[in-house]
Image (cartoon, rainbow, N blue to C red; front, side, top):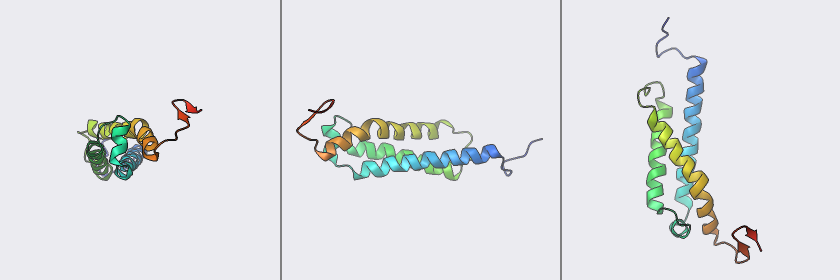
Length: 115
């Protein structure tokens, strides 16, 4: 028997929690991109800061929209996944390099650690 969209099952709660967790990751990526200096992005050989702000900002907005209306957006499933992937790429690839460049690096530091 069809329960309709009004009834919540454990699976619905799981997907709502997953959407909320994804939004937290996307918001973290956007806030982190805001706090990094522009020159660090270029020094790290990554795309520019404004581009990463747009990418992470759009992913955070999509994540918020999906977390707020997860039961109503069943047709558009690829957008929240793409938004999470964009935030994950920033956090795992761009952030560590930009963070290292933002510190200025140490002159006694080699590519594999301190000399």
